[in-house]
Image 1: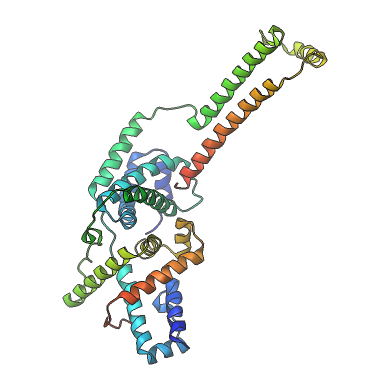
Image 2 (image 1 turned 135 degrees about the vertical axis):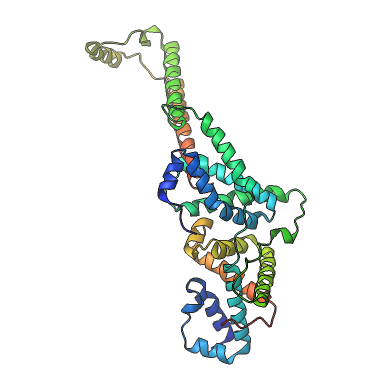
Length: 172
Length: 187
């Protein structure tokens, strides 16, 4: 058994189990008969003993004082919100987008597209039939682009918020 | 170090400032020590510790406990610390090695000669640790001072387990070889 093998075994074997876990046998015999490996084992054990008993650094009092002062001030300022910004921001974007799309369509197609009053339940089938039978209704590329833009902006905001929240939760 | 109490974390999530104060008191030395190992500057480490706790306060409501709290906490320290270090490296700085050394051991039952020898050896070793590359120095700190297992260190550093073991292997080997000859045979 070579010195290199013995040292590799010492460095790997003592990593998790510690020095108490080393079994007797050929390694122990080698260490007993090899002054260099015995010295290395002593130094490695000394490293483990010294580093594992080193005390933690004491944080300056200003750390806790500053943090707690800011946290308390923030807590006093935090308003009670019905919905978290993670909900109302995408929701607001969606409503704004829909309103914009409605105005755009009104501008493009004329007043017959504008729903000036909310139809009653009994009027919906007739409205739908009229819409389907209207051969002149062609969705223009501009309208598709606008709708796609709205959709992607809403998805983008939602995705951005989700990724931001995930990164925050995972410590980045 | 043990994981903070689940009830305490829940109270912190509910924005209980007194609970958060307790959490800060429990964790601040761990956070500061790690920050100091990353930045090697006491003032910067204190600033970083404050930043970390403020981030924890803001992010705790979204912390779902998929990883252990202290793993999450140390990851914040290291990520923010390394970013801060990159910014600091762009400007000249001078830090004395003495400032970075851990405090000497408190008095023990050992005889004074042994205690002095032990303290001196610790100082020599930490001087050596400070010379090691980041990846070794941080892994050693988490292993010895924060008492994390190799698997937990791998989670904190987002590295494969084998890589963490290799870092620790090489770091310990370098330290053992750098230790002055003629050390007491402790086996």
